[in-house]
Image 1 (cartoon, one colour):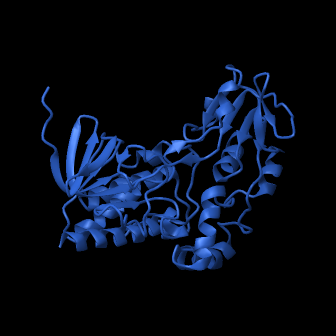
Image 2: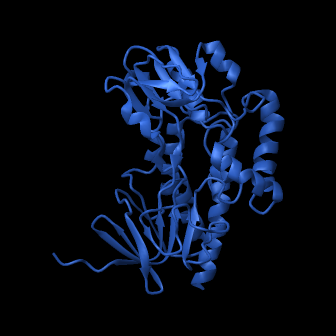
Length: 360
């Protein structure tokens, strides 16, 4: 079989989630030709495939990408399917060129541009935008494989609802936002144990009057967008802490867990006789384990000498040592708001400006 000639595109955007769509919008407005490729067949499936009760932490008024407000009441907190449908409608409204079902598996230099492969498909591009989130590969501790085979275990990325679980107790490992919310999701039908210690929590109810009128505008329009950035001293101090330990609990409060009957225990440190064991040596007799232990990035498919094990070295998404290479969508890429839709939109506009300037 003879390899086909690579399809030539000016700019290839890898990822059709909110980051990729935002980049596409801004490239369209600047007259830069591009193509978006995504591993999912349908736009928004990355959101549709998350747990059923998931809702955003930000009200709808803060959740729109550039050019299209998020539908619905501005004070409402959209469900995950609402976000998926919004992204699909966004792509259709602006007629963004997207090709689904293509998972990019290799990126390398090719002369002055780049060579990209996605299965049997080959592309040549002057510019490549890696529009992927930081949450790519689920993390579970190595000792997870030592659990008794009868224990149902899954990562938060594959959890949908309590119907996936066996009768009996559930251990949720990790007290981040996913761990807190999933614990409340399962405690109504299963005895639930939550292992770990939270790194803090937002002290007010995010759907309360104080939060809607004071906290949300201050947090999302000022602090997250302009104060906590890589260009401010406080932002540079906070970024590594947030990357290492995650964000504080936003919707769920520790007292909510107690009130719901969730049992709190220390971190899980290993396995004994097939059962999970806390760092204090207590074995937990459970029938289910849900690992809410986070994700890691994976750029192993990028064959470039300047890309190490971590994320590409960049400033505001522009990879200086690899002309024509850009990243959008990573957690705290430029600011704390980079993890929210409006923050992604700002990052995308900056990268699109850089691509347009390079294309002139």
